[in-house]
Structure formats: structure tokens, C-alpha cells
Image (cartoon, rainbow, N blue to C red):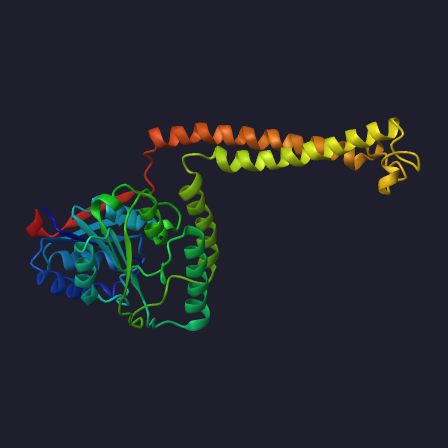
Length: 337
């Protein structure tokens, strides 16, 4: 039985890998727990895979996964989660900016009864304008929309209970939203300050453009959290709003027509006494004649879309099993064979 699984997504980190594996081994070997280190090569173009193989020959409990091409960090972590056998799964970046020495602290919090522990880079060693500022704005937005308030959703150093992480399906850039998704299924979430170091090797793989992708994925997460099992609620409500506006406009047109034919307008009519002395002839104005029926059409479309989404949701939950990555090969330390 494996106690702790470490999952690291790797992309062009050949220089960082030897010290990273050494630090992980030194920290984990002193815990008195059975552990495995899973490195997922996300289609690196440098010698990352060769370096990973070298490390597997040097250190025990190392498991390697290699993608056929670059799929992204979320699929890489998902592959690691699928392969992990530990009761607790810990993730961190391969660039040495996360400190493996913080892992025992995360494990202590998991042992204390929480299901997910998220690191908070309180003293983040990155540039302010293109890294810290977008991150601050994104964290505030994510916390507000998901209802799970964390200072640092983007910190890769996190620990999860196995039963939480195994039940989540990740797509797009959704690895950063795992605490929110875990909360949705009843997980208890905690956040602790962790150390953060300046990058020593290579360059960051992320730019400000990633913020826009995160916003789009946030919309998906919001939908999943509130409407994934009842999409008729969002589409149906929108359709009913259009229907309500359509009904109100039709009632006004009908009322105006009836009032005009019964002489309610003018000085002698009861509407005239209220100040409406001229017939507005709404039933002869194109806007008032056409718009209600357009809105009614929108109403029917959204309700129909909601019903179709309900059927699609049933299909998704019953038969979804499509992988989001393709593995080229795997390897592990000889002492594990």
C-alpha cells in the first residue's frame, strides 16, 4: 500500500529535474511512509525524458509517463492522478519554485481531517505586472464565482485525498479549480502559506494570455458547480424570462387595441382622465407587433435547448469515458519491478 503519491507535470525542465528528484527523495524518505514519485513528460522538446530515465535508475519509487505530444498541464496531472496509488496525492511544479520541504506540512493538514490542502505563495517570487497582478485578479474572481475563497488558486503545491481526486474529471485548464470542484462533492478545503523560490533554470511556460483561458474555464466550472446535473435550470430560466417579456408586450398591445376600440382614450374616456388622451396604436407599430413573437421564439428555443442539454447530461454521466491524453510509453525504477 502506497501512502503518498507525488505527481509532477514536466515540460522542458531537463535542468531542474535532477535537483527536484533529489529534494523529493530526501524529504519523502524521512517521513517513514511508502511513497512514489510520478513524473509526467508532457511532450518535452528538450532532454527531459532522458533525464527522467537517468533519475529512475538512481532513485527508487520513481514512475515515468511520457505523452506523444504536448497536451497541457491539466492532462499531464490527470494522467498522474490516474496512475497514482497513494492514499494522499501531492502535486507541485517541476521548476523548483515550489519547495518539497513543505510537503510534510501539507500531509499533516490532511491527517488533521481536511480533504484538500492548497498552498498559498504568500511571498511569491515573480514579476508583479505580468504574473502577480493577473493572478491576484484571477484569484479574486475565482473565489467570488465558485464560493471557495482561496488566496492562490494557481499554486501547484497541493495535497488531495485519493478518494477526492479519483472522482474528478479534468479538462482545459481546470486543474487549478480542483479545490472548488472538490468542495462541490463535499470535500473540506484548507489553505496554508508555503515557500516560493525564484526560477533557477529555463523560463516560464505561462503568459498573460493564459488568464483569458482561465476565465473561459471558470465559466465552465461555474456551470458544472451549479447546473451540470440540471442544465434545464439555466436554459429554462432564460427562456422563461424571454417568455415573460413577450407576454407583457402582447398584453400591452391587446390592452391598447381594446382601449382604442372602446373609446377609453380621449377626454371622455376613463384613460383620458388618467392623462392618456391619444390612442397609441401599438398594434400598428412593427416593433410592438414583431418583438413579442421574436421573444416568444427565443423562449421556445432556450427551453428546447435546456431539454436537449438534460438528455446530453444523462448520456455524459452514464457513458463518459474518453481519455484526454495519449501515452507514448511508461517506465519506473528497477527496484519497483
